[in-house]
Image (cartoon, rainbow, N blue to C red; front, top):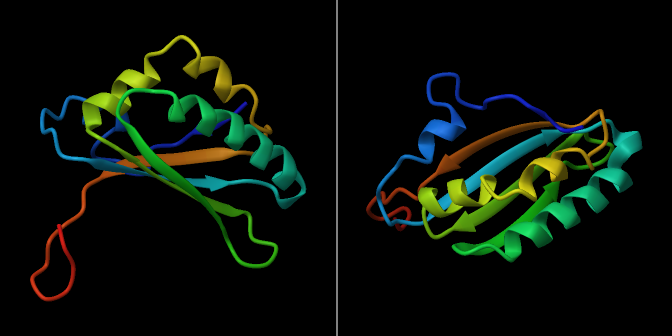
Length: 123
C-alpha cells in the first residue's frame, strides 16, 4: 500500500483543496520506491493516472524517473483548480488505488502554481 508523507510540513495537501482560485494547479508528487519494485510501481501509477485522466478538471500528467538505479520518481500533473483535484480524491475509486502500489512506495504530494518572474518565466 502506498504510504503518504506530507511534502510541506506547514500546509497539508488536503488543506490546499480549500483554495477558491480557478487558476490551474500542478500536483508534484515525489515517490520513493525500492528499485526492485520499479515495474510494479509503473503499472500501479498507470492505473492511477488512467483514473485521474477520466476526472473533471484533469489536464495532463507526466511521470519522471531519477537517473540510473535511482529510487526517486516524480509525477507532474496539471488540474484546472485545487478544487477539481480535491474532488477527484473524494471519488470512491481513489482510496482503493492506494492499495495497488508496492509496499516500498512512499508518496510526497503537494500542489503548486506557476509563478511569473518578469524576463525569466511566465505565470
